[in-house]
Length: 123
Image (tube, rainbow, N blue to C red):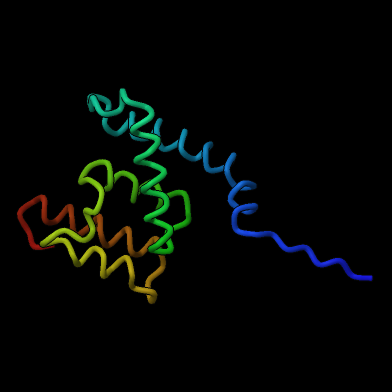
């Protein structure tokens, strides 16, 4: 007799919860290193909520690797939630939804274009 095991989404999320919290801690420490003087970091509860929200949104764009998740979190922290669909930045959302690109390519292009724009060039 063969036994079939079905794991529901809620159960899967429960299994992944400890790893998710470990990652949230990594993200908090990383943000503190990148933005050491930012007063927002003092509110750990708000920062954890921001990170959880950013992870959920990043998953909508098929970003799942640690590096790409952290890069997305940095953008949410620096530019605010919904940065990717703001006027003048809708190109970011289009890029994030481009299934022909690897997640690392998406983030590399976004950061390169934002860096160019910060220097006065076109994104």
